Amino acid sequence: MTAMTLPIPVIETERLILRAPHGSDLSHMAAFFETERSHFVGGPRDLDGAWQALVARLGHWVLNDHGLWHITEKATRAFVGWAGVIFAPGWQEPELGWTVFDAAEGRGIALEAATAARRYAALHQGHDGVISYVRPDNHRSRALAQRLGATLETTGTLRGTPCEIWRHPKQEDLA
Amino acid sequence: MTASAIPVIETGRLVLRGPEAKDYPNFKATFTSYRARFMGGPLNPYEAWMLYAAEVGHWQIRGFGMWMIHDKATGETLGMAGGWQPAGWPEREIAWIIWPEKAGKGYALEATHAARNYLYTQAGWDGAVSYIDPKNLDSIRLAERLGAKKDHDAQTIDGNDAVYRHPTPAQLRDSQLAHGIEMEISHYADPLFKPKGWAID
Image (cartoon, chains in turn yellow, red):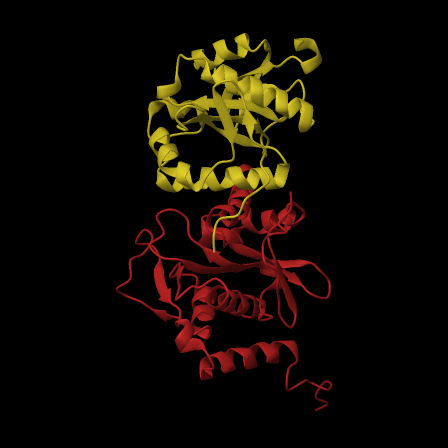
């Protein structure tokens, strides 16, 4: 049997293609989840944990009709991170989340991907003006939330970890 | 999005379908309970949901996975059975779980026998194992009723599990074992000896 193809939409931006998570992304996810960078987003995870995250992302799309896209660079097809709307027990609302690997840092890739994912979620998935959970010590994510035009709404916890809750503007207010 | 691409299997009493969002409450009830102690549980609500999402996503990556077992007559869910192979699993596994309140009626045997037949005849599997907690006697008993034998030499997942090796498709085809399993299933569905009333004396 071969892997199935979920109807997960593909988003194209100037430099990026946001696509469904693939089985072949596993080794890159496992490598990322070994790094300290992953500690902001539920890491570290071992190979089992990375596998669980990968298959759960696909299940998330099936169960919620939205989820995380894997971000690839158009020029090289390299898989460099993920972005999309996450919702699971413990989340007070659907959340726009993003992560980019070290190699993609500092080139505006997270901004480009998060902007596209946010727009798609608002226009096609019914999630407009969403929140983002940001760990207070995750300065780069915090800066990105600001650049995306989000405002700090309150603080809370996500799965027992203190978080800032940033609120994104609605699409009509972004025009 | 639906689980419509996942094959549906019908047996005498059961229908096996891909796991769907509406089946989640039953899964959660079991996996957040003590019954899930042999499967890494009990889980908190976040973990239970993520595991269910993983059950669903496993089909997408592998092309096989765990079916949700439904009672053909009522549609209610009874448990899950099917193929399972996360990263790091030494071999492809045949796995099952029955909700605690549905145990003792032969559903796991009927569902797992049908799932194994599907994997062997439709999905091209040439064999399979089941990784079982040595304390999970119900599951060991079921593995043995399915003709699986403890394989002392096979690689385990993490040293805490026993490996039961299933008969191959060739060993199973038209075998006394297969007929015995079918006979046992039919006895559950329609017992040969039915008490006709209470003894009077």
